[in-house]
Length: 491
Image (cartoon, rainbow, N blue to C red; front, side, top):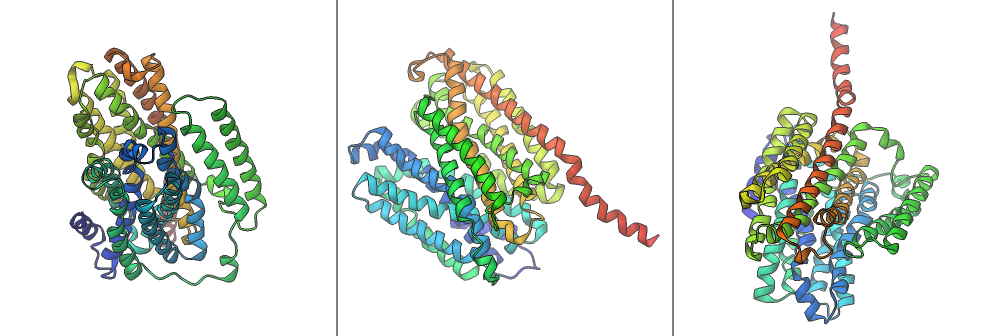
């Protein structure tokens, strides 16, 4: 893993204009993204083992995953803004330290309650790492190579997500469940060393900047996002009265948050930034696209086992093809973005995802695994290109003191898409299969559920594509106007 990161960071940061430490700085950012993504997926495979170890129900051990996800979702924007105000380097170092220590506490937790609390602390560390990793790109990588850096970080995110289930299964089988948390400690220490040694030192801000943190807005946003995340994840697919209540609470909380931000002297999120079409479109498209990506993870296992009759080992092997494609295409996608421009490649990535999502429902079941994997590869490669292009477009030409909060917003949009996809697309799949128990459904019913799910997925990508197309003229005008004015002066 270290050799992969070293090789790719050398390709991305290999510019004579930068200091020799740029490669090591980018390596620390890559490891931060890898570890935080690994923490998202590695615990899922251990839930049955943890349920037996703590004599707990599935609903109880589910909070081991949920606590991590909630901590990231509710706090990622706030910690991004805090990094803008107090210094990104020191906050990132604190986040890596917290993540590493919390990993140790998870491994030694004697009770389920303490394990869940440690996972929440680990999620806070991961939120800091995710939010500030993208924010640091502008300080460590030349602007012309921003796309390549974003592609590299996307690759590390995909590698962490893909590696989690398989690595977790091996560690649990050989060393027991604590190993899935202890495995983070050595790379966490290495990441802390590299970040401390090579990341640029924080610039000293004014006293006003350091005391302008919006505590009320932070609390309202965190509670609203927590309510939404719980509404989408509780009930295991049954959207009952509690889910509806939480959803209304989330909407009400967002309204209160907007009012608080208008009145705040130093708001957590400047609502005026949503007037920027690049930012608002980027956030919206990211949420829609990651909802579709989550559909492949939710529906895929049921389709492969129920309709194609694959055993668990082969299901895992086929499911790993998507993240592997994302990992292999991330850096090349970033280079393409640097060469051809973020907006063109955003459209190209969305067209690829739309094509794959449209083809998948049309492929007959008799085509077997190749008929499922081929469209999945197109979807995943398109997503890798979209992610590199969209992140580059959003993170380019923004004020330095807003990089942390904008980075947090990018990750928040992604997390909201994942949470929504897990709930909504799972419900669509159940409706399409027309059965109350998907585990005992006939292969024809499972195939029908898959077809409806990816028909909806294709529609969501089409909406994202429409947003990107509408935003095109507005994006191009600013770049043409400055170029035309000097030519008139020289005439």
